Amino acid sequence: MTINKMSSFQGQKLVGTLYLVPTPIGNLGDMTSRAVETLQNVDLICAEDTRNTQKLLNHFEIKTSQISFHEHNTKERIPLLLAKLKEGLNLAQVSDAGMPSISDPGHELVEACIEAEIPVVPLPGPNAALTALIASGLTPQPFMFYGFLPRKHKELNEALVKLNQQEVTMIFYEAPHRLKKTLQAMGEVFGMDRKIVLCRELTKRYEEFLRGSLADAVEFAKDDEVRGEFVVIVDGNHAPNHAEEVLDISLEDEVNQKIEQGLKPNAAIKEVAKRRQMKKQDVYNAYHHLTD
Ligand code: SAM
Image 1 (tube, rainbow, N blue to C red):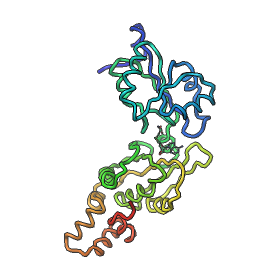
Image 2 (spheres, protein in one colour):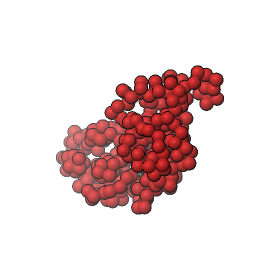
Image 3 (cartoon, rainbow, N blue to C red):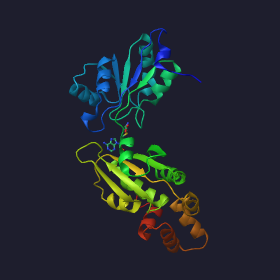
């Protein structure tokens, strides 16, 4: 086991430190004074989007230079950043909003620094997932943070079928234009009566929490005009064994199974709708991929 305490680096050949600096998720008042000082004092800021971060730096009158560090240049940038750290420069890494590494760039750089025995210092600060969780009203621990679900229908469905066995509270990120499809798919696998909280525009003027069942959430998201940033928090499965019998296969497979067993497609859809407490039309649409 390796132990990396800041004190264990003292007295060694001078290397720099990588600071991981969270930034506000919508409210500039959430920038901590330590985050401001760190960004002021480091030699270089590695930013997901330098234009976006420049606005933050201007607001806090921080003059430090930036270098871009995002998902498309991570591989090329890491050797350059490691070289700077080994020369003794201190770096800060920031993403566009919230905590670096959490559904954002950063993890590979942290891994590379640990491997190269360069100190990594995390600052606490804004993060959408935990901010949403503590106000959701759903059991805060244990929880699992999932981040973004796969986009393609098949992969999304497979991921949800696995997640259906989770007994713990689950936290997801989702883009507004995919919310409708994701909630519909969740309802098909988890059952429409599962509790869910949509946490919208956290820390901003129009912050709101929509608490209810997956059926309510699907109804809320049915318009194509859903706007804002969302964290989606879903209650765990409190009857996983029972659910396994009923829901541990995708809706599509369940309908097909019934057709293979001799039911006509319409009857199969009707039966699956009844078992999943869904509207027949919703099962029909999902089975025929009409909601994609
Ligand atoms: N690193 C960030 C963090 O620590 O939360 C997350 C970045 S991820 C690319 C962006 C996603 O986080 C959004 O699609 C949304 O799901 C969620 N998010 C970020 N800010 C939010 C906010 N103010 N309100 C609700 N969700 C937010």
